[in-house]
Length: 327
Image (tube, rainbow, N blue to C red; front, side, top):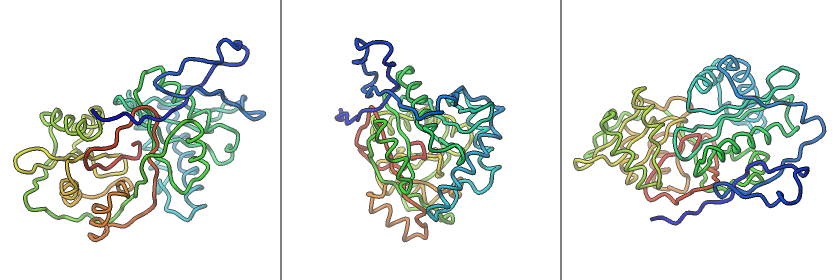
């Protein structure tokens, strides 16, 4: 059994009006209770659950928000067009296992946040606020809303990926209780079209689910059954077999996909055989120098760095892995 290295997180505490007897409130899932402080005017903004009809407004805001922050730091845009962002929002708002929160002011949407609830670990994102509506604690409120939801749900941990060039979001998430765990590199490039001798890559099937989940639990201490099940149904999941057994899998070699393996060679086999690196490339832990160097030597390029941040349960990985943009 690995040692739990869970750091504190954050949920919204009770108001002062409830009396001093409640100020020392009981923490949930090892998350630190905090009380939000809003600037003047911030409370005119209301939060509500997202619905599919919000997709276009949320998508356009996501496109503009990511475009603004990426351009300010001279990095490529996360979404190449507004339609790309709108398409993602349609998918998330229609998925029953994604919890969504929308911020409105005077009846107009000004931001949104999402949390993936397909497993025991919740993954936050994307969170976006319209550029004209920023610096009014809307992002903080959107974060607190989904963290409060995960405390109610009983999630054993909450995680996210933070763009390393965005100092303000790093500071916000740290103040909300997240701990920085891993620096990751976003990699892009052409498909490699290679096969590693002794490593056989094939599409994953539902019959492989138990073996893949067991592998994930061996590496991380938990599985990602919901995500992998979706990926198998969509036809994007692939696995690698070595010496007659499953030694790794990838829900997809993509920004929203994750991979788990026993060794770097298993991950190299999955990367080498990938049909392409769709939806913004993929992430890999930068400290995995062997795999990082292998990717660079095979023509893949670094786009930018991201930081894996966590609250609650966290086990140091006992194997090779590629995180998704959620965690």
